[in-house]
Structure formats: C-alpha cells, structure tokens
Image (cartoon, rainbow, N blue to C red; front, side, top):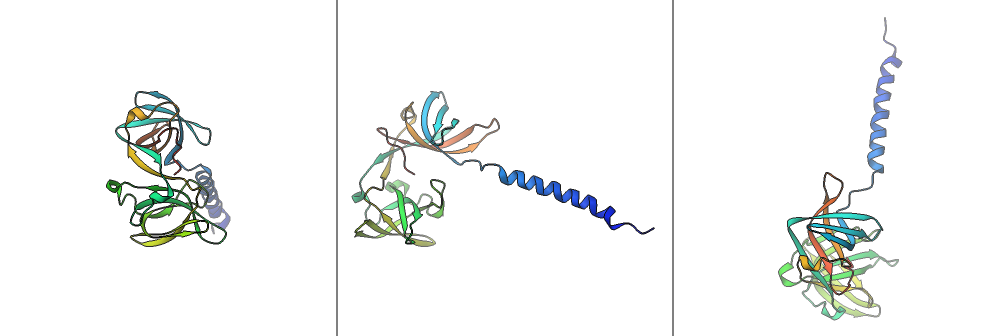
Length: 208
C-alpha cells in the first residue's frame, strides 16, 4: 500500500513549528547585560545593592580580586596628541562621529581594549579605544583623528562633552550614593558577579 505523503508531512510540520516557537521565545528574551550602571544603595560585605539607571534593583557580588578604579572629571584641553583614549560616539546627521563622552587612559592603562566595537550606552553608539593622532580646533569643538590597530576614526568632541580619566580607588570608595559602572556576568540565582567596577568621585556619574 503506498504511504500517504500527508502522513509523513504532519510530523515534520509539527517539529518545525516547535523549533520555530522555541527560536521565537529565545529571540524575545532580553539580552543578559554585561554592564550595570547605577547608584549604590547598600553595601553588605561583598554584595552591592544598586539602583540601575533604568530603575531596576540589582545585586552585585564582588569577586575576591575585584578591581576598583575611580573616575574624575578633566578638561577637553587634557586630551593631548598621543593620548590613549576611549570614546563613545554616535553618528550625526552629517555622518560625522560625535563623542558622547571621552575617557583618557593613564599611561599604565595604554592599549586597554584597543579597537572599535558596538556599545550599549545609547542606540547606534560605538566604543573606540585608540591613540590620538591628530587634534584640530573647530567651530563646534575639537576634531580628533584617532588610530587603532585595524583602522582610524574622526571624532568631534563638543565643548559640553564629558571628559574624564581614571585614578586609583579601592573598596572604601564603594559606599551608598556612589555612582558606578560595573562589568558583570549573571550567576545561577539571577544576580550578577563583578570583577571590575568604575566609581565616580565627588558625586560624578561615570559617563561611559
């Protein structure tokens, strides 16, 4: 007796529907954050309770070797030829890359994360860590040519763009009210573990 094609097709269709439904469910899940930005509300031993910038409550478990660095404000004039910087940029209507923030690395951090990649600070933003190869004053700020191993980028730093740098800090700087950005990974109970925290000094919100 010939096998009816519909008999074979129905199970295949059912499997395809299950797979498609599973893929859709995965696609709809929010991405697991790799950074938490917010204000410390409570410190309990190695655990920080943080109110994130989006309004959520986050528990951060610091690893035993967690590194803490401070962030302080500096001026646009502190961006020198040869400085190794990081900058978050977004494309302007004219196609130029406008700096949302610039952080100048101290010499012992030169080369950190060199390159350019998508970033999560703003929609369509990019983080580029590179060396300042050229700096020219313009009508709307400072025009920088920055170069990294695989390329270069022209960046416009406006007069109101936050410019910061890193300074030494330790766990004593992690106190209620301090503003932080922490690099995290999610652990089994749904909270987050961090091994690197940047904390703003004197009430500063890390702009990156």
